[in-house]
View 1 (cartoon, rainbow, N blue to C red):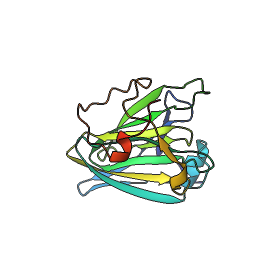
View 2: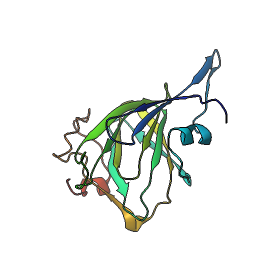
View 3: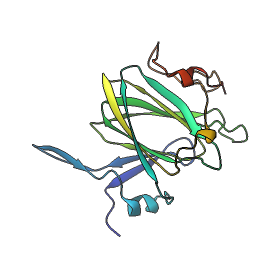
View 4: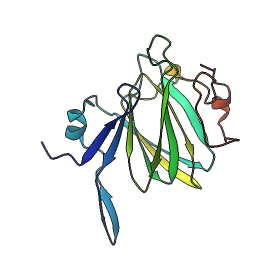
Length: 178
């Protein structure tokens, strides 16, 4: 097994991890490992990842809060490739002891931190910089029949989004509240 180049911090929701990779910087820029299967397995992330997705968004775009229902629930590794976002994970399961709770972290291209989102949570983000590229590594293929979500402004979530008038997709405006 190779030596891990990640530091891992457990966040307030069970299973949600902030993974901080080591950046090797010099006068040319930096190099970073963004995925290392053995290092992730050492912290309990053992399912295979089957697809990579990349989104581009402009300032004040808010995407979320999305999830896929069983049997196609997706775990995600989320990284802001460039720009800066506020990334949010929320527990939408009414049978969970942490129902309605959320965690929010800033991810940026400068730091290259990675957020691990277990399959049982809703996920979303808003763009804080002029633009952002966000990469998701997912553990299950997209299945439209399993796609779901909750409104970003659900009163039960009490998320303090740092944008007053977010730019939303039509789909996100019609999601139900929690």
